[in-house]
Image (tube, rainbow, N blue to C red; front, side, top):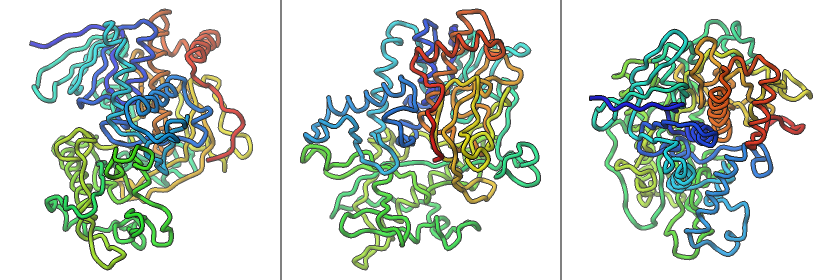
Amino acid sequence: MNRQYGCDIAVIGGGIGGCAAALAAAEAGMRIVLTEETDWIGGQFTSQAVPADEHRWIEQFGSTRKYREFRNRVRGYYKANYPLTAEAMRSDRFNPGTASVSRLSCDPRVALSVLQDMLAPHIHAGRITLLLNVRPTAADTDGDTVRSVTLEHTLSGERIVVEARYVLDATECGDLLPLTGTEYVTGAESRRDTGEPHALEGKPEPLDIQSVTWCFALDYREGEVHTIEKPKAYEFWRSYQAPFQRDRMFSWTPLKTNEAVKRFSLFPEAEAFSLWDYRRIADRSQFALGTFDSDLTLVNWPQNDYWLGNVYEVPEEVRQRHLEGAKQLSLSLLYWLQTEAPRPDGGNGYPGLRLRGDVTGTADGLAKAPYIRESRRIRAEFTVKEQHISPKVRGANGAEPFVDSVGIGSYRIDLHPTTGGREGFYIPSLPFQIPLGSLIPVRMDNLLPACKNIGVTHLTNGCYRLHPVEWNIGEAAGALAAYCLLRGVSPRQVRRDPARLADFQSALVQRGVELAWPVMGPV
């Protein structure tokens, strides 16, 4: 017998966008069912083990008030529960790991605790029903309306049916889009179709998707041996070199070590760049003496990007093969670091590197889920393209202004190597807005994207996929669904009616959602 739930809004996917959507809708008085495929909400922050990628103004502006509350709560959690140095305790910009990639690099378990605390009042009041370890397998639709979503419990196989007036797809890969028949795109568009300067020449390639990464946590214990069992695919990965790896730039060979600090640097000519520091989540010098025996770092490096195949838009057996391939790559990188990485003293390997499955909450030591950079994307009423945010195209005018803005974000267009065999690249971009039109499907009336699956392209996904932007997307989607239910209107009507649009944007501003940037330069 199936379990059944009825609610105002079903948020399918408990990552960053899903949590933000559920909070916004619950604060508007809606009844929500929030689901998550793993047993950890939080997505990139937690189950995928990726510290926040943020723009350089994040401490002053450029995020929603709720996202800033999350960041403040993370810092408060450390100050309330960890013995910090006096300097760290005084700092209002305390960064637990002093990571070079992030101004707030925290332990996944801390992010999980904070998100659970933020949801707790609504869960305890019955406004949010949280279902863990469930994934969507089917949907019932009636024309342009989604009636219900069927979920399967990943451990028991139990079927669960959720009926809702609005359904938000906050899954990491846009899994509801094919299940509901919602029009969507994948992969790389052609220049002919989008007019983007850096789009593909010739035909689009729907299966040319950014690589995924299976992250893991490490510490380092000098004089100890924590070498893992040799991965079964080690010899393959040890000798593998993609055609685009000129001089093995992204291979393991150039990984250099610094004897003084036992850290790892990527490029021979740039010893100062430390991969150990890159996504470090605990810098022990900021904690009271003896709190940590070692720093802690999360490994999401160029060396463990997996691009040999896709984990969606393929048969299940192919998906599983590539998920296992991504795991094998990460384990092989670790084994190489433990056994073969060249040391300045002439030796090889750092057996003191220890896999920290307690940090990621898993038995195998890897993250609970792979880091997904690129999702299926809805065919939207409006699609953000490179020319809307490119400084080369826009000049000194700033990014394209959107009258229907529901938020802002900023990051360079960051494309990692793709499953089509293309090398990744960075393109400068301008601080941008999130147009409401990119959240509205061309046909479906009560399904909204709440993650990386909005109306963007393969290229612009590269800057709309980061933590604060995903939070803003989810928060806007949750607020929009609630607004429409309370007023008996559709998202399309909100966008097309200037008075309703202004009213909704005013409600967002009251929530602390920033709709426009001050005058900014490119990043």
